[in-house]
Length: 177
Image (cartoon, rainbow, N blue to C red):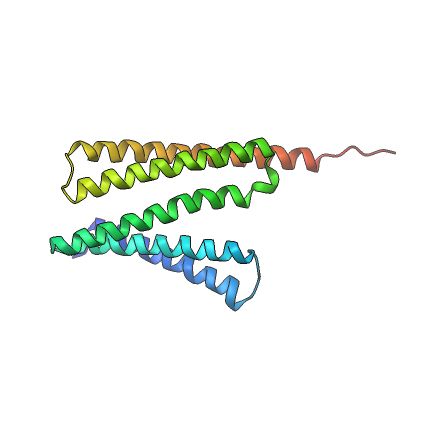
């Protein structure tokens, strides 16, 4: 019988695999050229790292061998450190043309802080999961993870607001008779 946690891991694997295949279909098979060359590689790294994290966290959950669990945790953590700041960066890059210079500069500074928070999350999780640190690191991991989600949510909300504000002011024009 498959338990709920295993279904979550498998669902994550299926979802990220579907995203990877969709991206390959859009860019290489249909040749839509939706992204510039550099952004293509960033997206492939992002999706590949997300797939890697899903796979290795699932393998960590499934294996009984402590050494393999340690290796899987380290690879999964490295994948998370890779894809999470890349996702934040892509969020800024996709909408950069609608943001003011000051807003972009603030978001890029926030990206540095966001990457630091990701490192704290991964570091505390890795030390806790490998039993190299005290149990309080689990609380540190959870609290900084919440901070990371808040930063991401506020950034996405701000970007959506800026897009709405920018498109609203651009779409309304005065008509002269």
